[in-house]
Image (cartoon, rainbow, N blue to C red; front, side, top):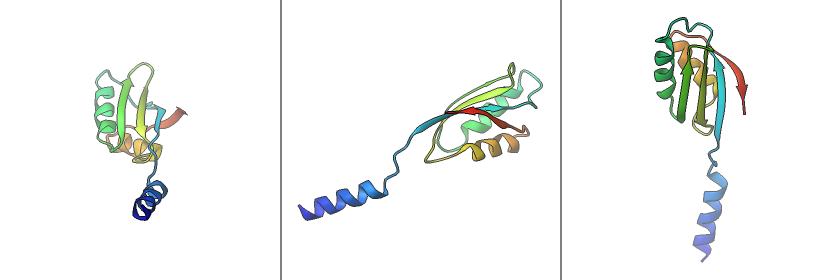
Length: 92
C-alpha cells in the first residue's frame, strides 16, 4: 500500500496536465492563395499542434495546440522558417 501511495504521489507531482490552447497568428506576408497551404503544413509539423486553419483572407492561422509540448514562440518560428513572418493576433 505504501508503494502504491508513493507511486501515485510521484506521478501526480511530476505529471504536467496538458491543456489545449488556441492562438490566432496574423501572417501578413501571405500574398497568394497557395500561401496558406505552406503555412498550414509548417505549423502541423510542430509537435503538439492539434489543428490548424490558415486562410488567405484574412491573412491568419488559427492553431490549437498542447501547451505542454509547444508554445506560441515555436509556432511563430515554424512560420518564419517556412518564409512567413507572423505575430500573435489573439490567444485564449
